[in-house]
Amino acid sequence: MLKETKNKFQDIKPIKRKDIRQKKTIFKKQSFEKDIAKEEKNNTPKFTIWIIALISIIFLLFALSSLFSGATVTISPKSVNLTLSNSFDAFKNPTNDNLSFEVMVIEREKEKLTPITDTKVVERKATGRVIIYNTFDNNPQKLLIDTRLESPDGRIYKTDSPITVPGMKIVNDQSIPGSVEVGIYADEPGSEYNIGLSDFTIIGFKGSSKYEKFYGRSKTEVKGGLVGNINFINEEKAKQTQLEIRDILQKELLNQAKAQIPDGFVSYNNAIFLNFNDSDNSFFESENNSITIKESGSIQVILFNEAELSKTIARNTIDNFDESDVFIPDISGLGFSINDPDQLNPKEAQQINFSITGPVKIIWVVDKEKLIKDLIDKRKRNFESILGKHPNIINAEAIVKPFWKRTFPEKARDIEIVTLNN
Image (cartoon, rainbow, N blue to C red; front, side):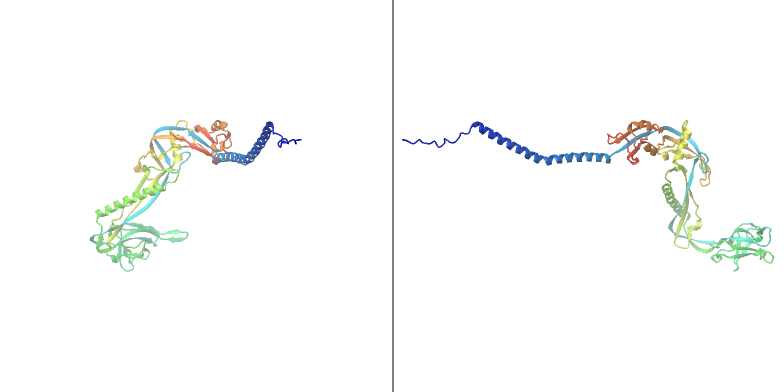
């Protein structure tokens, strides 16, 4: 009997196609879930970073907006245009609302060393000043011109003018001698008559009771006596040198005066007065080969307070002026002239009359500090009503930063006022 042959593959169950599909699906699902989990794991830090970056950007924007926050208010003040041709008065010591003026005085000296090439023979008498005293009685004593005085060493001098010596006075039970000053000159030319301070007797009273009671006493040295050759600079060259020195001196005085005009004050070219002292020709002679020629001068500058002058102009030219503070741009550029300048000594004058001419724009002053104070922390919608408290402003606009803010800054330093004077 033949044995039945076993099929080796009979116990192997065939895999159904459906099962294969299920396994593949399960595998794919598991793989997909793993990928999602992995991606979520990888994306979590990125998402956090983006959130942090977005918050940082928002914070930075707010920080920058705070840094650049503020308000700019542009205003146009009230103004009026005029053409001036008016006269005004100013006073050194004004009363009420009168315009005042001040005088700045500057004195200066300049010198120049000049060579000397000419000589001449001179005979010059020494000169000086003495005081004549009366201790004789209380009656005045007349002395003629050329009254002779004698120094202790016998030198003779003469008075250069007639004088009357007052009598003695009693003050607080004490006798005070009468006295008078007079110039004297030497009886003869020559340097031997140059002396220092000295007492003098009056030769004409010698032998009388007045000789001891009338006497002279030096106020200055007696000097200038000379006989002989002297170096000198001729008149033409001396005058030329003087003019050169004066020209330099004038420029220096003007520059110094302009530099010293105080802030808030104004002056004009026609309100500046220059004076030069006439030099003594004796300065043009010397015993040396060169000489120093000196010139001295002074400048007197009339000054006006700009605010006062602006308000005075407005008060005298604008009908129904409201007495507000005003200012005039480039007020120093107006035409200015002193009426009767030849009769004016600025240093001594108590009142001056002057004229001002030219086109002018008078602008009302806006109290910027008060405006800023009124705007602090106020809502933008109240801007117009706030401007109503400032009648000197005719037009204004405000820009608040950042743009979304609805109120003005809380600090005055963050509010800027820009004035348009066009």
